[in-house]
Image 1 (cartoon, rainbow, N blue to C red):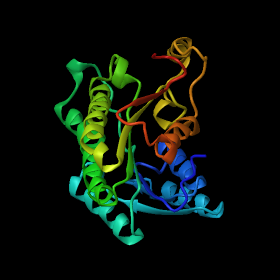
Image 2 (cartoon, rainbow, N blue to C red; image 1 turned 60 degrees about the horizontal axis):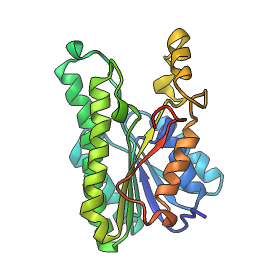
Image 3 (cartoon, rainbow, N blue to C red; image 1 turned 45 degrees about the horizontal axis):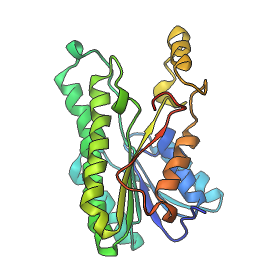
Image 4 (cartoon, one colour; image 1 turned 180 degrees about the horizontal axis):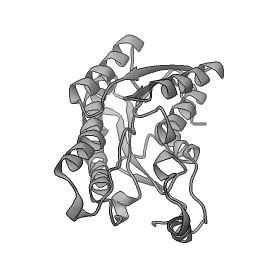
Amino acid sequence: MFRLDGKVAIVTGASRGIGRATAEALAEQGATVALTYVRGEAQAREAADGIRARGGQAEIIGFDAADPAACEAAVADVAKRLGRLDILVANAGIAIDGLLLRLKTEDLEKTFAINVGGAIAAARAATRVMMRARTGRIVFVSSIVGEMGNAGQAAYSASKAALIGLSKTLAREYASRGITVNAVAPGYVDTDMTQGITGEMRETMLKAIPVGRTATAREIATGIAYLVSDEAAYVTGQVLRVNGGMYM
């Protein structure tokens, strides 16, 4: 079940965290995976080497997700070289936190350029390939804060909410071509992005999660692996919440 043998997948922002766990999960299910990175070449290479050591197929590609032309060129290149593109997981993102009155315009623009602009550019290139094949899976990695908000994260939560709207729109646009588009909205996950949450703030956060703990990146990746599988062919335009019950 959920096998991906013979399929080609691109996972953006895959050098660490959810992206890396997703690349590993898809490779374990039989997909050939292209891991993208912007600065973490060593980490991406380590992840790809690990996949190959376990019998999987992986390669790495470096580009800046904030550059639409670079995004589209990288996606098109993978599809051309490997002969197909079945799966896109748009995970690359940044978080620049701060209250609205302290939010710099350049930080807002940078957040949207990477989190939203990069996802749109990658999806635009991917759909060109998927439409010809009349099949494909696209998953945008959103966030719990894109649905419930979070004080001090105006730019980040707005960008993640945008991905939910984007997924629903593209689901309607491409359903007739056999392409499904969904979003995953993780709660608090044990990644580099949440390592700085300590002490009283962490205790408060855990009290708000019914299951009483943060998620592992692998748990998010498992949800993504389902959405990109053949078994999820009738699931599109949905938000899969993997948040331990923090937002229902």
